[in-house]
Figure (cartoon, rainbow, N blue to C red):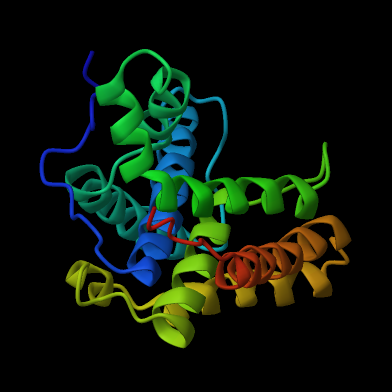
Length: 204
């Protein structure tokens, strides 16, 4: 049995910190795929600030998604490995090989479930920008493996959300204000959890 990578040019991490980056990008790819699927099927409506804000944000995120789909696996691959590890020795060996990224991805998902309460409003596209800005600019600087990450001005994108938040405050739209602020907190929670998750290599 084989597992579909669902990306033609996967970038394979070697160091544990690179596995952390891949786990984060898997989460981001999966989030963007679901977001744009819902958007394209008219299940949600994208409206953040001015028409220019909307165009800039959507174009940047669609471009990023295309890059991820070329070189980063999605969560389906991770779930397939977990569910198939017992089927054969080959699948078991693959699961062992992919174990670091699975551990880090699982940590992200667990923290997401803790940080975002059920029924709570969230802004998935803003969360993606928050995660990338903190990880790329402030933390791990993974642009050697993923140079395309340098092509986006994350702070400029976040400024657009800050402008919307200020307008929402003036209009006393406290739900929108809280949702935008909460995405910053959730993003920081996920990055903190990822940074502090350890994986011990079994040399036996």
